[in-house]
Image (cartoon, rainbow, N blue to C red; front, side):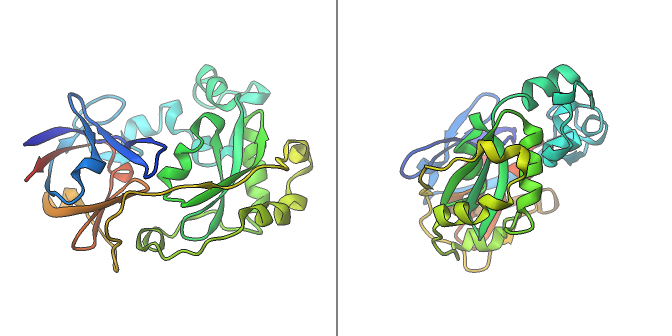
Length: 264
C-alpha cells in the first residue's frame, strides 16, 4: 500500500498520547496506527507550497522567489518583535499582517530539551508545544498583538533559552521542571508594556507522545540526498518520525517535498 503527496507539517490532536495525522492531497494518514510498521520513503520532486511549481525549496516549504515575496514568510514570522501591523505599517501585505499580528498572542515556557521561551498565537496553543516536542509547557503572558509578545520574548531570552536541542529532545533526555516557579522567577523581567498581561494563576500542560523506543543517537534523514529510505516506525515526537535504526525524519523541515510512502 502506498501514498504520495507534498509534505506539510503533520496535524495533531491533543490526546493521551498525541494523535498525529499526515495530510496529503488525497490521503489522510493517522501516523499512530503505523507504529511498528515498516515504511519506505521515496523522494519524488519539489512542489512549492505557494506557486506549486517543481522548484528547489528554499525555506519553510517555499521556493526562493516566493519566500522573499509572500507575507507568510516575512521576517516577523521568526522574529515577532519586528511586527508593525499595530502601527499600520506594511511589511509585504498589510491586510494579511493585520489578520495574523493583531490577535491574541501567548508568550510561554516549554520544556522539550530544556526550558525555553517562545511565542505563538493563542489559537495555536497547545499545537505549537506539540510541534516542538515539549513534554510540559505553561502560558506566562497573553497580549493583544504579536509585537508585544515579541518584545517580551526578546527580554526574557537573557534569562532563559529560546532554542530547542533537537537531539536531546528526541532522545527524551529531559528533566521535569517546575514551570510555575520559572514563571514567577521571570515575572520581573517582563517589559513594562506587557506587565499588565502577566498570567498569575495557571498550571502546566503535560504532553504525552506516541513513542515505542527513543533513539540513542538520532541521525537526521536527508531524503533529497538519499532518495529512498526504509525503516520501522517506532515513534512520533514534535514533527519527527522516529525509526528503529535511530534515523529521524523532520516532516516540518521537509515541507514542499513530494514523497511517496510505502507501507510494507
